[in-house]
Image (tube, rainbow, N blue to C red):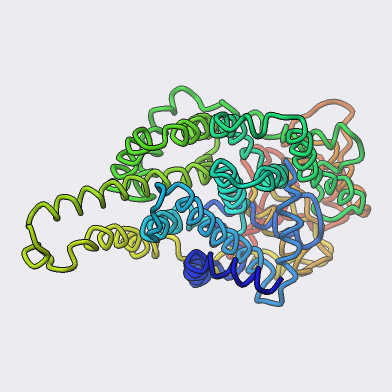
Amino acid sequence: MIDAVFKVVQRNLAGLALAALVLFVYMTTLAPDITFEHFGADGGDLTTASWTLGVPHPPGYPTYTLLGWFFARFPLESIAYRTNLMSAVFAACCVFFVFKIAQELQPDGERSLVIPVATSTILAFATLFWSQAVITEVYTLLAFFAAFVLWCLLRYRNGAGRWALWLAAILMGLGLGNHLSLVFILPATLVLLWSERQRWLRLRVITPLIGFFLLGLSVYIYLPLAASGEPPVNWGYITSWERFWWVVSARQYQAFVFALPGEDISGRIAEWGGVFSDQIGWWGLIISAVGIFAFWVRDRTYLYFSLVWAVPLLIYAFFYDTIDAYVFLLPLLILLAVWWGEGARLLILIGQEFTARRAKTDADRPLGVFWRWWPPFIVLLLPLASLTTHWREVDLSGDYSAPIYLTQILEDLPENSLVVTRRDRPTFGLWYQVYANEQRTDLALVNARMLAYLWYRDQTKARYPHITIPSPATVITADELARDLFMLNLEDHPVYATDPVEAWEAWFDFVPEGDVPVYRVRLK
């Protein structure tokens, strides 16, 4: 057993060393606590749900939450630092599997490490990927599952046994327990493995394949089990099948799907063009285009697979009407990096061939005896350029702005205050401080917009029996529900708002508490 493990480590030593180096870089730039940077506002929700074994926002992220609970128990720094570290670890693991993917895609007989190293590091230091590796979010875990599944599929295509296919199935189920966008790989899988259908399109292969997939997907059983414990973060307050499906289907966010207004399309095209060029540079996009051509010549099946995966994912993310929709594209960055690696391979061959024809002997060649390695050397320098140019942009090692902001809100509030929030940052940030860090547990936290959901009103009544929660007989707006919440509690409790809106000012005055970003609510 020990010998087998040693052989596996030895065979993967280069990839593991690279992943360790990348992890070191991520840890050097890791956010030290909760952060709102890099679209990280959900971090408070995810960290608190992980720490308390709760249910974060739809679709519930059971795989992430369970892994987050494990990482949150590490005796390191703050709780949020530990879940930030989880993102870094899975980003580094993704880089390792991209290294392995590049090896699987090498031409027969090629064993060079140059292209696998360059491919994986060009992904590792792309700004979007790196930015998600230093905060608490679900996207590096999404990229990890995408890369792991792709490696399994390529191993199977290259002659591995059924274990590779069955491992891909269970990983696919678990991956969908982290982020539903992983589903876009399924139709592409048929394209990749169609030529191998004589091996897998049989009942004795398909039956366990489905079984392993359902086994991974069964991680969603966690949601009703967690909800039954009534944790402080408990989206959907799952007490019925309808509420379970409301969470899992992410019904709350379905209004954003293909909802980008027509007048915003041109602006998004320009914005996303900048996003893509920022990842690997305009020169990197050219090399990726060369790689697409190279795959067309050498491995057309893989090219079709990658396009069938990338194009629908790109369309879905493009028309998803949120400002951070492009974070869905992390799996596409894997494909982009692999295209880049194939383009770099072709350019290396062209460079070496061009140099070789310049002279008849090594002594006459422009770089002497080193003529064979200068093109690979140039290719390896390109990811290092990304490392140096993107470091300052993604580095959050000194970011304490969110903890300072939250501490300012909490430290001077009177005991047993009711604090009403609206936006994600103060809501999830205060959940983290109060429920995870157990600061000011005397406070009652209520999100005004979530009052529109019956499950949230039921949950809030159960959690804060001393607070009067409105129970409207007719359907009213969230702002009207907030008005009723203020009215019902002003006489009995100090009431504060973190981010009041103009609609509330018709009924109440919001008195700032000095320089603290919180306002005392008073009836006009």
